[in-house]
Image (cartoon, rainbow, N blue to C red; front, side, top):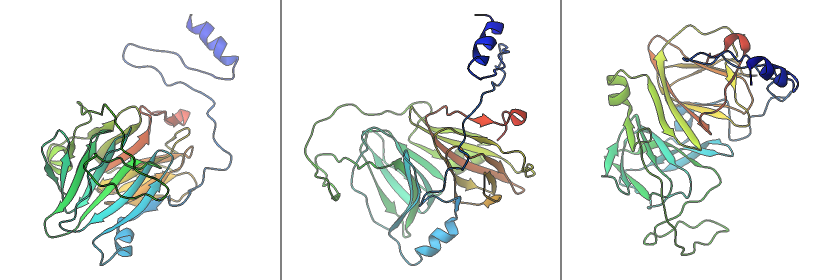
Amino acid sequence: MKSGKILTALSAIGLCLMCTQSDAQQTPLLAWAPQPVKPAPFTAPNKPIKRLTDILARHAGKSDWAETEVLTRDYIGQYISMGPGKKTPTLFYADDRVFWWVASGQIRFHIQGQEPFIASRGFLVQVPYRVPYSMETVGEVASLRFEVRPSYQHPSYPVDETPVPVPGFAYNKASYSGGGKYDEINKPYLDFEKDIVAGGRKGGGFVKDDHTWANVIRGPGIATPPDNNFGHFHENFAEFWIVLEGQLDFLIQGVPLIKAGFGDIVFAPEERWHRATSGGTGMATRLAITPRPPSLHYYQPDHAGGE
């Protein structure tokens, strides 16, 4: 069908598309994108920003604790502190990857099929679905990790492990098969300081499958864009970020400009405009987390391709 006929057909259903295409790229398309008149709320425990300094202050003097920072239909994100010598049971999740960012301390990971390794500050670690894993804090201080796993799901355990009781659930012996794998994008770990900072890389995808996208985005500080640059929004799902390095500036629809630093968690509900840019004078890095890659980004027509 020729481009003129395509435009005619699309205009009949209320869409205007720019269909010019070259071998290198396709011109951004235009659409009428639905947004609620009243922006989606920040439903507890989600807030525009959770500052790591405040989180640590709430648990001062304790070495073993967990606090939920993000909860959506797709993910639960928790800060978890584990004291020296403490271990987790061996477990796995049925159909989704689990991943972590290590904020401090040292954690030895035991992942089926991999040699054990120690992850320290800045490491990103992931485990595919149905792959048993455990971890333990090594050294003389507690470890602190930010863990992202499938929401509203309970783990399974190898038959030689004792399950942690869950109210309202009984663990029954059952057989299963199959399991996820690592690949060129999804690797067991990334040493942020060595692979990104010392290696001079800008980042890139760390987790990417049919459900999850966790993307490392790094760049130098820039001047804060004007408030009329809204950034983008997503249909039907929220986005959240962990600040891995430096200062990030976030503009979220209905919220004053946020300046976030190391370890802070920033959250944008579904269908709210949001913008993230590197701030300060040095490099800044965020881990951006969304479901369903490659997720749709709706931009302002005069800022197409912006943050």
